[in-house]
Image (cartoon, rainbow, N blue to C red; front, side, top):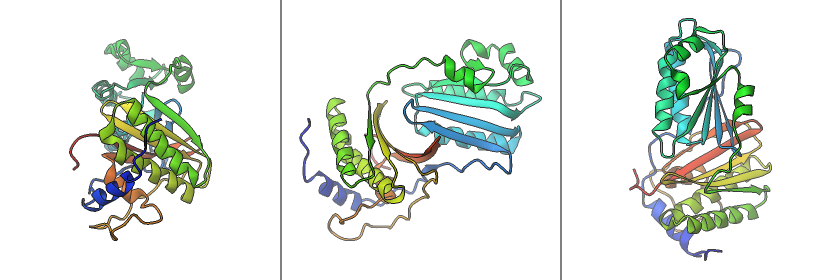
Length: 289
């Protein structure tokens, strides 16, 4: 068990308060509009680190833009596997092929790379063109999502801690302790203080606003320490209001919430899950923005 520095949070609070909060927008996804019937639905499975991106409607400039936005925000979370479900895509001229090939290249270029699986019906022009171009040699293609999921072999995810939590005040302390142990095990002392603050604020925020059973994930992905908190409420958070400076000289009795996450994390966002949502943050060692 790693030794916890009792002054670490106070030191970090003074550091955060001295830095103007980042002006970069968080990666928050708009929910899929069922009535409109066109757009992109995104779902994260926290346990398997899998993102499913389902595309609905007729391919055109608006849908292409929605897909690129959803891909950018989804890959910022850096999942292990990306399913792209095209069963409800109307693309009679297979004009979207370039988008899916570019998505695969982008996923392969990440460190570590993200596995990509396409789900598209066998009797479509899109599927025919994908096979005609030889995309099936480097891209897994299945006729539906059920077959694609069945073909995925469950393998242990390395450098990853999964911790179920109750919606009680003591869970924030357990989250901080899990981050401390993770940073010690993975030799990431330079990310320790920021990650503890992020984990504590995400858990406290979920307890306050969701009040459901939670789950904490701490993972080492490339050069980032990833912190994810899942709860049972589907409503995604909004971008927090960010003051120019943090008020007060001392650590307040209650958490700073997503404003502190926005200041301390390199990038953060939220995604729907099958039974609620997950709020995630990545903490990297580079110089802050």
